[in-house]
Image (cartoon, rainbow, N blue to C red; front, side, top):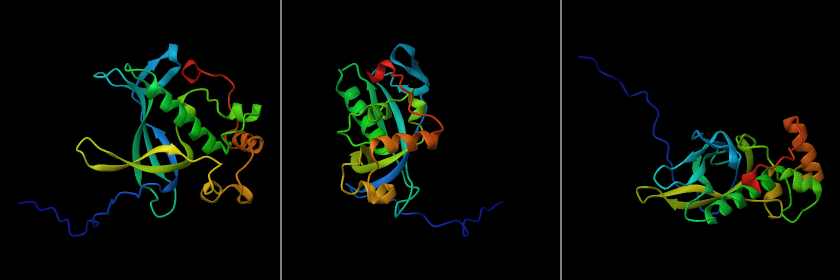
Length: 199
């Protein structure tokens, strides 16, 4: 008879909930759902459609980049469309705008041409792998248990943004510098094209 010896296996890791309100630098990746609608600008297979409800969303994973909770993962949906009305899609647009402000160091009140350009993306591929400062919240999973989620992005107007994101000189960057650093980091400027879903 064959035996499998588990004596040398690692001990279980504790996965206590990350406290509500914790600010964490996270990397967001989109788990492709294979749903495209060119008329909406949803291409590349990033969007997911729920066949039961008809809702369309981005299925996102957030990995903590550093600190006490490094490598911990959380999952949240970013709404794109709901047959019930525009509210879910509007919440999704608000979240994506805040993610771009956070990732690119843009103050929410900055409406300069450089800042406006930094809030534009060419498609969902531009969000896949983006790093920003997220705020932890809790919600119930399908079994009624609490789980940690990211539902909000922290922008440069927050008092803890610079310290947590590590902005140069200990201060949040201006829109012009952040757009320039975005171009240096990615090798391209934020694209001015605006798909219909981002109107």
